[in-house]
Length: 337
Image (cartoon, rainbow, N blue to C red; front, side):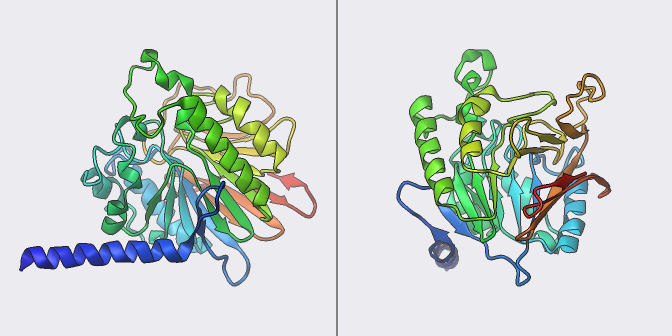
């Protein structure tokens, strides 16, 4: 009797997941898989970006989550963007790993955070079973969770292009890195990256969105511990410039950061402070480039709000205090801090 009830429950959960996929996902040949997020009735879209967080509530993860809930309610949150390194230290060992509930479901409990979470994988996630976070089993456990290697969220006036950046980094394929990575889905680094960039180009070319955002785990520009990722600068950045991408959002460095590109309108936004931070190995006051608008070596997160004409980016610390705000207008093509 119990096994029949469990089977029925599992079947219902699976059907629910399939129904969600059928009604919210659009797949076009030669492009990335797309998820549809309708804008609000006033035409705006609001979301929170958080990265490098999954530590079972430790290192102030729970405190950051609490403030995310407060801000989410204030801004009318539509969904959450996760920039990767979702589960420490080595991702999930399977789709039944208890770390999923302990670091996600049991932590982000605020009513405003009960929205879709769109996530990419980070390098720590690749150190476990990288396919586990992509499994539909996790959506049966918590229906908020959506994680793919690369995909698009279409929110009408905003399109967000999620890119699997870990396979770009050549160091991870060498013994010098000192870690083992799950490359079962990446048999060849060069062919994987080439195919991904081709699909990304097709998706960007098709986009009619007012605002275009690319999300990846690794920083393209950063003065943090890890610094710039040269592979992304060489292979991904030229495509972003060609197709008019406005923002690049990432994690990896456990800090909050805003850097302007020196020869394009692109803004680089790091939100990788979801739990463990405070490395203290970077002094942002020493030889700080003019392009660095903001740097904070502590825990926190970022919110983003878009209308057809304006965008507002806000960084918060672990107490929910505003650390930095940036506003830009498509009409005036001017920005202010």
